[in-house]
Amino acid sequence: MPKDTTIKSVLIIGSGPIVIGQACEFDYAGSQSARSLREEGIEVILINSNPATIMTDPSMADHVYLKPLTTKSIIEILKAHPQIDAVLPTMGGQTALNLAIEADEKGIWKDFNVRLIGVDINAINITQNRNSASAC
Image (cartoon, rainbow, N blue to C red; front, side, top):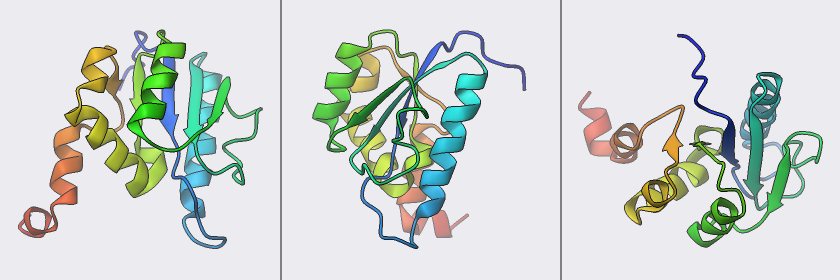
């Protein structure tokens, strides 16, 4: 797949609090995503409520926000960074996916002209519904 040159700035949503020894794959995936995006010249803005992660190290992203993982925080960041083109919620596991759905339902992505990358809302909704996912 060719590089999408329209994406200049990406918001990565972290997973929030994690227990030591559990869910560290989200921290690793998020930090590697941030590195890869920055290597491609894309600005990275990160939100995570957990300061005890590698992804929240100031060297990982251009802007790091240690804020509650809520739509209110998302709106604050989108207002502070109107250049954000896309959001990558898949690096934050269930927490980030739930937040992406909530933001979509409230029309936040549309209001700020931000698109989801890595997954779309329909795919998230299908996987959230255990009954429809088991029918596949």
